[in-house]
Image (cartoon, rainbow over all chains, first blue to last red; front, top):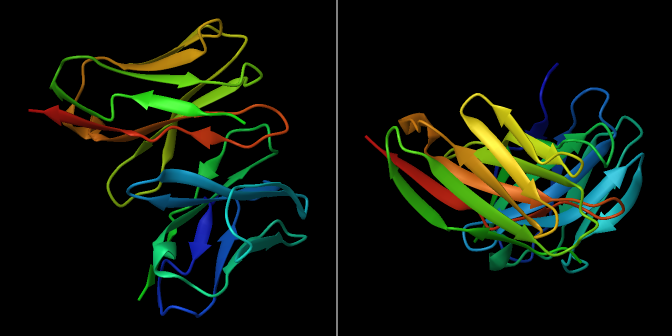
Length: 112
Length: 111
């Protein structure tokens, strides 16, 4: 099976802009979680979707949002970008919320 | 909510020696504990996991032990090799919540 894929792999934006990141899970996986990874903060949970419903949300401002489509693909959106949003954004998929998560390669976002 | 601590933050060992990384968690309801290895510039990869009904699990040179009473679990790597050099993350999960990751341990295996 193909692994988790994320697009784009790299993004450069300026402050105030918005960005949309995409994640395609492993075929058959219905759960997608998003994480922000920075050198100082490690892996921080953003949100989790299962069957198009948001199950959990981490402690991030409302500028961070996401959704999941009927084919389990997921997108996350960050509006009004700030310098501190520069990070590697990882998504992970699993068959269901209780199962092992498999990570995508990440999207590296740089905000100038 | 769950809180996961991980120690040490950095670890250097000589090739062939053993390495041990320990994580503690706060939520006694957590029942699934995976370990991920992340090499520089790559995605985290699952290397081993354990569920709360098991005390120990081994896979070749890697083992994980779980002490539910003390709420800690550890990763053991024996006969370390240079390719074991990476950042290792532990995580804890309980039903109805999300995965919570430890801050990571940077392991360096010196030749």
